[in-house]
Amino acid sequence: MLRSIQITRTDDHLLRLAGIAFFVVILAAAAQVEIWFGGPVPFTLQVLAALLAGMVLGARDGAAAALTYVVLIRFGLPIAAGGAGAAALTGATAGYLLGFVPAAFVAGWLVEHGADRVWQRWLAGL
Image (cartoon, rainbow, N blue to C red; front, side):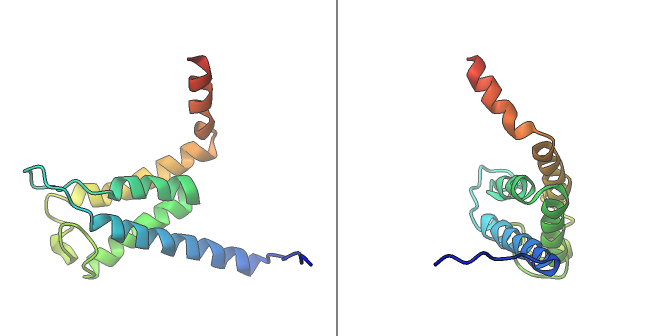
């Protein structure tokens, strides 16, 4: 027999925190996939992960996940493609890492305001 589950406000906060933590782990895992094209910055899947964080979690929580990721790098966790600590945030990859926060926010904001349905209209117009 199926039971209904009532989600309380506390459970909602825990669910949001779990989503943020999940995308911090996804961002860290995406940094481990590096493809070098000869420049100072490797190609990684982090941009995709940051945008997905915003699109799935929403603007605020997606930006919170990206900001948490950047703060963990600053505290020395070796979860960035360019290294750990202040060196990762002052080198060639610094702009990318810091840009994940507004990128996740903008992606989430666009989805919250209906941009996720635009591609369907565009595809129908073809």
